[in-house]
Image (cartoon, rainbow, N blue to C red):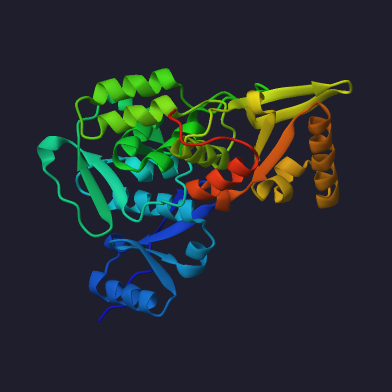
Length: 331
């Protein structure tokens, strides 16, 4: 038997700008031998089967983050399909780098025209839905649903909490005007109207209406959803505080009638260089203590919580009740 030709590699640009070399077995001369070789390499843990007939060395695969892995898998699926499809739903969210609160998709999601009647198969979830031209954009050379349409699709198919987290991240407005929102609520409402009628349209619009451009992180988004669940008073978001020295800072949540400031503190506040701004951990902690002392000096108490409390409505209810907030109302 003639020796198989060396695999031809196709370079796709990763989200961080680094190349990822994929082997497409369809491009090899001796397909039978090559498929067996790659299947054996997968069994031995030397390669990852990215898609049908597409392989990547395991070291290259494990060097990618979860979102990058999914984007690469989606690209490989699209590159090997005979009939085109538009990357959509959770897969499109991965292309747009929108947080999904731990719900990173396992299957590659593609939207195809209703007339095709395409079926899903292992690793690929097909959605037979109409798409207008304005809802399709090109991202790194691939057809992907627009950010607005992606968020509406997610809000229609996912639970309320991850939908709000995703929408908050996209509409976020930097209070210092350093960056513009990725999408506006008006664009989301237009995308919602274009898709009508569809299953899940009520809950999709509910998530859009609840989302707030002032929310600064996924942890704050989760906290707001839990607050709605427990029925505590609605907080003021990103309230500015000053004293005789000048600006103290902006609170994530504020209940002025109760003199209470709420802070949803994730670990990144103390570990991420972007937030530490070249300060040591000790200096970050001292700065936070000084900030809290200044808030108390102007009559505000401070309540802090993290992820474990924010994502559990009952824990957050007990936490805020201990700080003096009533619960059981309706938003």
